[in-house]
Image (tube, rainbow, N blue to C red; front, side):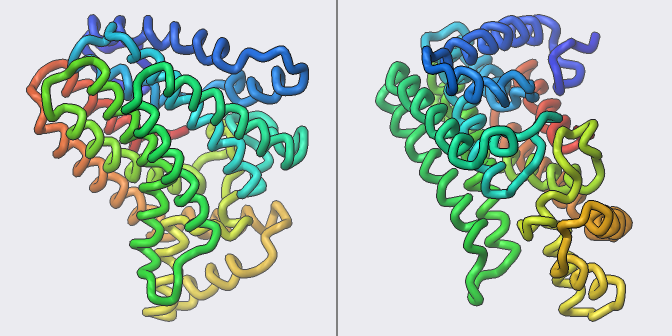
Length: 335
């Protein structure tokens, strides 16, 4: 019988109930974690949290912890930690990308300005760091290493590849640092804190690295396919800001190698002024009809298959099945 766990099809009922109950606890703990007497931060820090979200990272912590004792000390704290860190990064990302919306609501920097949004992100990072210190020394180390990768990923995306860099390898490395690092942390912490069998934390870390890249490649597809009402993000916002995505990299390569008129036309438009919404919408439509979109979808699926192959190292059972379903849902989602 299918479960009610969001995003994970046909999960074992007992496991689903266990995780859903703890997700409710985590939601409350997230709000407690950003509580403050400061009148300004009280509202800005809760802005994106109140907008909702899929809570992918806390769910992965709990799924990984189900390989051991999900009620072990520190597991719920770890789930809160990874989500706080993710939320903090969103405040910064939206400033860097000039994104007008996030999760179907106006972005923080649009409401309060860049400085307030950046400092709110810093505030959330500070609260996440304090939480890691309450878990263990290893949690502090892993969290700091992940925070470093988040910063490097954003920096490398902003600066772009050098002339000697392969643009595709550079892009995948950015995805690994900006997205996969936090999913790897979620899997590793969940497994290690739960007392899962030796080697499980390493498996979950490697799985997180793979599934994180697949997740972001799927997001590249969604950036073009969905609309603001369903995804909470303005379609093509990355195009407007000149942020590389896999579909645009594929089109640019085809234009350089084959010099076909359609690809060259898309590249010309991408390099033009996309500040007008109608002009941006035209480019989005061209990319929706371009083979690069399906190529990106296929690459996301292949990377997800690689993540599932890592999971095959786990013992067969309901948790591994749930993780496989979780993986599929991340690349097949429509929002």
